[in-house]
Image (cartoon, rainbow, N blue to C red; front, top):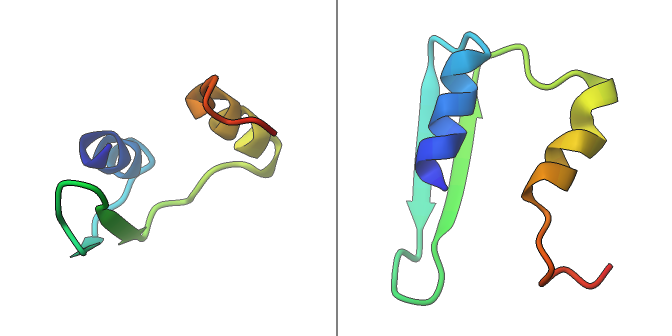
Length: 59
């Protein structure tokens, strides 16, 4: 997951990336990434979520 998030930041032109990892363990890892890239276009937001949706998500 972290690798994919970093890749997305770099592909979107980020020159500064900050990563916070909290509660790293065997059950839960909380990752927060901030960057100075342009972000995702408004019309592509739904697609971004759809690509990572799985059968484990009920709604």
